[in-house]
Length: 373
Image 1 (cartoon, rainbow, N blue to C red):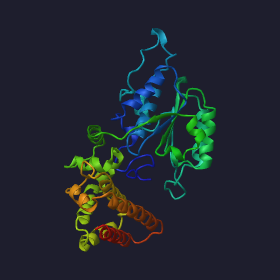
Image 2 (tube, rainbow, N blue to C red):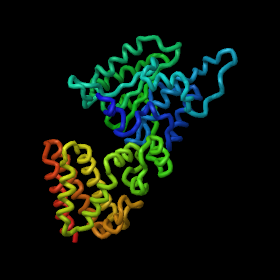
Image 3 (cartoon, rainbow, N blue to C red):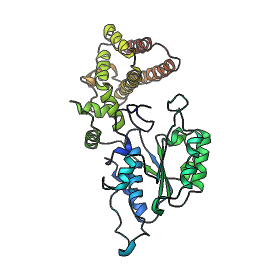
Image 4 (tube, rainbow, N blue to C red):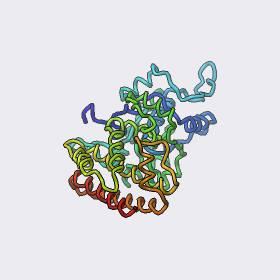
């Protein structure tokens, strides 16, 4: 892969988790890990779960940095054991930090989807990706210290890879900690889940989101509330929305919905044409996601009697309230959402023309609006 291509464990447009020294909004998870560390009950397997983009990989690398740079409690030297650490912070000038940034830390192994024969990331983590840990464990640990393994994302292991990792969890090498990043832990083998302690990470609040975005170097938009509503506490989703013009796309989508029940065909055609431009695959994928979001917010408006707050686009509340003013209408929008989502994903799978697929979706929404009157 080129230097500009994100690795499988890196959100597009964001720094790699190993480059992110701080994490925001996840104090509870950090303190839970530190409590286990300081009580000499450091489990060998940890499952880091939560929505995408909330900092699971960043926390995994942060824990790895801490473990590799912190002397074990039984290695107190001439002056006895150091006081229990109160934070996972490590001095950026520490040799471990430099080695990790350079990808040269001998005590760390990172498992993710490897490249296929064409030089592209595979769709899953295969057994050979896990088996290479055998050589890693066969080497002497640096200075007699710890080893750390990060698997990101553990959900992406195929059956053979999962079984190979399970054997390591059942018989872990001494002073080894395995950190499994998981967006959907239900996809993991129950035996893997049972052999790990779980750290659950939550969506970020507005202030933590702003701080995390500043750390990534992303340009915070003029309407941060709109970004917060669409990103739902996920920094990764927020960066994606910023980089792909997601806020502007969603605002145009809501404006088009505002022309219902007789939809503005010219604006709908322009939206569809933009999705079909060459090299716009990511924007097309994002548009389908934003259509799902808009329909979900329509259904929620009718079900609760109020539009979601904060707004995710100008005049969104007024438009959603007009189109979905009752539980009956909410049910109809929920049914449309299920149909539209299925049709959209099927159209992607069989490579239908993106413009035709978007127009078909928009007219399906227009049909539902007519029936909801």
